[in-house]
Amino acid sequence: MSSPSARPRLVSDLPAPQAESLTLIHDLARRAGVVRGRQQHAPELVRLDHDRSIAEITAASRGVPAVWINQAREYGTANRMWRPTTVLRDPPKNNVIRRGFGRVVADTNRLVDMATVSVMRHQQLQRAGIASEPEPAVAQQLRRNMDAIRTRIIHTAAAIGMSPAQRVRAVTVTDAHLADRLAAHSPLAVDDLTALWRDLATPAVAASVRSSLASLRRTIRPPAGDEPGLLMPPTTQELLTRARQQLIDPTTADDPSTTGHRIENAVHLALPATATEPDNDAAEQHRPTSQLTDRFLTPGAEL
Image 1 (tube, rainbow, N blue to C red):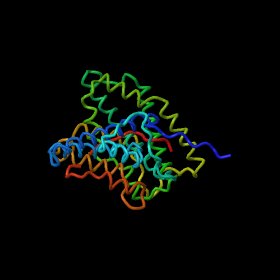
Image 2 (spheres, rainbow, N blue to C red):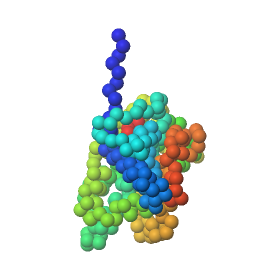
Image 3 (cartoon, rainbow, N blue to C red):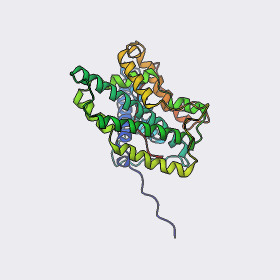
Image 4 (spheres, one colour):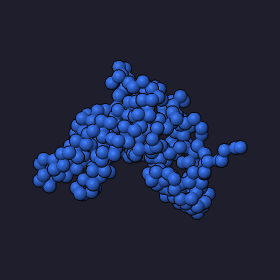
């Protein structure tokens, strides 16, 4: 007797950040298609294609398979509806390495968000005349979460046999990346920053990391600390210090070519570099078509 076929995966089955990315890609492709139908070379097309390229890079960094990104773009271009009940195409088989690479990228970006939210909130508190941390226990939990995520990055990279070149691309945090996230958080009021900070500091984050680490440890022998000769993700203290310094001296954010730097940074973090790395074809598909070139992300699926 044959086993029943698996239920088709729907857009509504995806984590919210992934579903939002695909919806945005579809909308931008649809709007570009409408404009292109009226005028092939309208100036608005450059902006729409640029925004869609950024959205596709962001989706890739969130662990969205290239086949779903392509599907959302194709549906939008063809003016087909994109609903929560839309059936997603089957992704390629044997994509554990690809998902692992996406996890490392997503965790690196999460560390950046934790550090930048923390220092931005601290600055806002100081401006309000609050000199010392009013929630020290939460601040400590945030650091524990960051330490746990860093450990998972190291173990995941070892589990999938990530090469030195892949590690450089996945775990390098540039000043432009820090400046971009600080700029994204800067409009938030201190209460909103604190709410976001508490979400990042929930003990559930560390618990989730422990669960995925247990699975990884059943797969490989745990690395013995920082492996000589291999680039390690930045430490919690290093990220906090660099984010604080970037907040004091935001030279990257003031650069007139910031947009290009941000896109290069997103490509650098979200996409592999060589033919031996996962999703290399997707990198070509997601490369911006205009001279303008980016942005950031959030965690993808668990390994």
